[in-house]
Image (cartoon, rainbow over all chains, first blue to last red; front, side):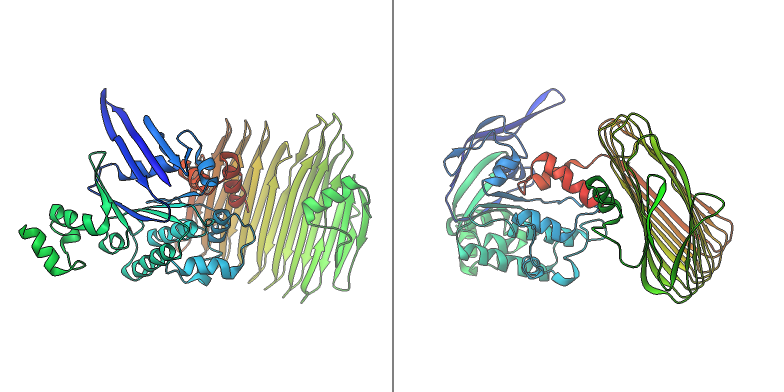
Amino acid sequence: MLELKGLSYGVEETGAKLDILQNIDLTIADNKLVVITGPNGGGKTTLAKSVMGLVQPTAGQILWNGEDITHLSITERAKRGISYGFQQPPRFKGLRVRDLLELASGNRKLTRDECCSYLNRVGLCAADYVDRDVDASLSGGEVKRIEIATILARPEGGLLIFDEPEAGIDLWSFAKLTETFRMLHDRGNVTILIISHQERIIDLADEIVMISGGQVVRHGPKEDLMVHILMETGGIGGTCDFLQPQNCAEEKEG
Amino acid sequence: MAKNKVDINLLREIADLEGTPKGAYNIRKNGKLDSRASTANIEIVTKEDKPGIDIHIKDGTVRQSVHIPVIITEAGLDEVVYNDFFIGKDCDVVIVAGCGIHNDGSDKSQHDGVHTFYVGENSKVHYVEKHYGEGEGTGERIMNPETVVYLDKGASIQLDTTQIRGVDSTKRYTKVVVKDGGEAVINEKLLTHDRQHATSEMDIILAGPDSKGRVISRSVAQDTSQQVFYPRMIGDAAGFGHVQCDSILMGQAKIQSIPAITANHPDAQLIHEAAIGRIAGDQILKLMTLGLTEEEAEEEILNGFLR
């Protein structure tokens, strides 16, 4: 279980204090798939980064499986099963796709088949990629999918955080990706936290957390929150096809 | 044949040798011949006018190798050795050179290897050279290799040179002259630390039409070490040349990278790229999120970069 208690993060900017996260209380139960959504600049990525240790909160506590991890290093959190898929993953001159998958899995002798299975799950034709460097020769979408594959290769039973996994990924690979998230969730034994604005990813969620202005403005089961999101956005992505048309109409009228 | 642990370790480091090499070989230890074998196609003979050997490889020799490692375990040894390779037409051979110095003394040990290759028409050569130093002494370990290659029409060479740790001072000079349809590929890898100095100068001369030259230099400078790179690609004909130098800076190290491209022919096509910088912070963070410590992440990045 992941628990955030009174989590705050602020920065000083030209003398003025800017609150990025304000006193956030949030509990995410084991094996749930939770989507964090909300307007740009609302604090979603900062929240996710503070769970991984990439951002150190200015106040509050983070508990993972009952342990206070607020002051643990990134490495120590990773060893406790927390993983983070970057929105804009770095490139490496000299590190191959295979190297990243092996480091992620903790197994320095992954077979070619094992590497391929992770890559296939993000829609990459594995044989073409396993021995390639993760460098500037790869497109943004390719690097992003390799990034997600490294998270899939992490040992089972942890917390997987994905920051906008859909960004930069083509429609065909995106369909594969949503299918992979669904399978991962159905198989259980893993808690998944995804920052996303995509209807098809939000549709996978057990729960939705809406963050705006550094605060949790709504948190609840997908079924309950979807209508609120639609009301506030006029349909995510300008459409509400994914909901029953009558629900959409009723809510707008109501 | 070298037998003690120091010798065995040096030979493993520089030539991946665990025992007697297959094929032709010449092992030089502390300024003298240690052991040698020629084969039907590859003859190794001692030079008469100066220290060193001549290696003659017959026309049409394919899938054969020559190992010519040099090891120095005595402090105070200072030598210049000349090795000339005469490679016939239509060959495909691997040549493994390299020098390992183990210096436990207070005097410097120095090996300056001057290698000259005459590569016949349509022959293909893969030359692998590793430089390595170790030992507890305060004596400097110095290596100043000079490699000069003349490629005949359609001939190609791949030069893989590696110097990872342990060599206090090195001045490397490489020159390759590429004739019609020939190709030279130079992969240079270098890691310096403490107060070490390394300088690498190169002249790649594209002398004939359709000649190609490619230099891929990757280096890491740690602590207060210093490196200078001066790869020069000269297009005297309608050839294609590419120079790429990437360096990682660590500690208070200093690196100067000065790639130069010169077109003396209107159809020469030449490109150079050079980059120097510290390891990117987001690379370290990414590997830490996979469970590596900061030090482990740095090591993985360096190992990959210099692979």
